[in-house]
Amino acid sequence: MENANFTHHFLIAMPAMTDDNFARSLVYVAEHNEDGALGIIINRPLELSVKDLLERVEIPPQTDAGFDAAPVFFGGPVQTDRGFVLHRPLGEWQSSLQVTPEIALTSSRDILQSLAETGQPKDVLISLGYAGWGAGQLEEELAQNGWLTVEADPRIIFDVEAGDRLEAAIHLLGIDFANLSDVAGHA
Image (cartoon, rainbow, N blue to C red):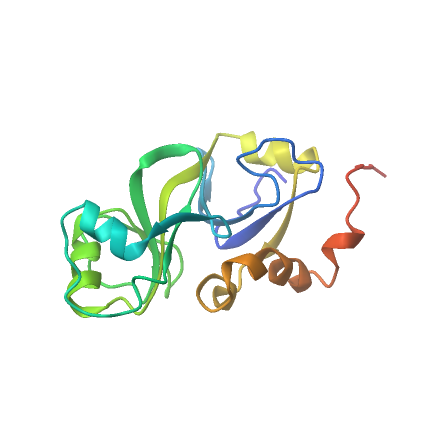
């Protein structure tokens, strides 16, 4: 696993995951390199709508793009006071990390202004906080069977309801969550 790169992969928390921040979570990995990894939990909506968030940061919505119904997500336990927007298409924003040719993670205010004014970018998942791992930490958690990994399918991020995302990602592996054991083994 030394040269593994899990950028644009899902991390599926195994049933034995005891950290409350990650139990039954589905994480989209936006960056993974020799310095560590950064991801966004995509299946933990907060009791905060996108409309409420925009009003809190004093960017009143100019368009009705379903902001009342769209939740903001708990993206992870790091920098929970900071917003992150996982989106497609890419666009030109002040602070973006391009994940794939179609998906980026942006943390600058200009994307929220565009969203409020024009409803663009079309597909967004807004989170407060992110999940972060130091150098080698994610690899260690994977070796200890803390996570399953599978290449990400953007439809699960942007088109599947939050409560169904974990199961949809597990189905990419061809297995059922009910069949996962909380006991790990090594051959």
